[in-house]
Amino acid sequence: MGWAHSPVAVVWPWLAQGQTWLGARGMVSSVGAVFEGIDFGALPPQVDALLQKGVLAHRQDRAAAEALFWQAHALDHTALPPYLCLYKVLAYQYKMAQARTMAEAGLAEAARQAGWSTDWRLWSHGAADHAGPERFALYTLKALAFIALRDRRVEDAQAMLEVLGRLDPQGSVGWPVVATMLESCMDHPA
Image (cartoon, rainbow, N blue to C red; front, side, top):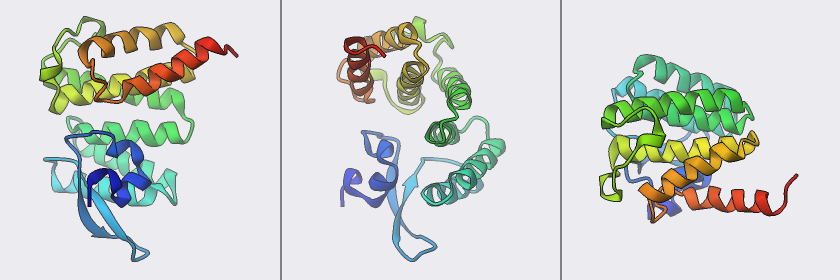
């Protein structure tokens, strides 16, 4: 079964959108259904276990999932997947200010790991450089552009999307979807 068609893609479709550092592996959920667990990459086993539990809990109890993701983050602040899980679950709960804060923290950590500036406006690496923390940084910048759009910070969203367009012209991290949303907002202001 391909990654984009796995049960995880149905539960967390954002994970199936070209994330080369994520994969699937079989697990059984508490209700007996097959759960294609997320391969978050090399993580301490305790962090991975908490993230897996959080992904399973996400559909039924987002607050419980959030708590599990916070526990995973507390165990290892350098692990990038807990940032992703947190900013996603916070956004799903419409806690946009908290989602923004967590995405900004994840972006800073990914930039540090990639050897990039913490100021995304200064990024200049080519598309061939996008793997590991670099890809996470671009994906998270896309998330921040979406959050900016939700917060009606259109200029911020535009600036982020311009950087993404320059660094990821193929749109591999999915930024064209946010760009289309921005165009729609510009065509139909509230």
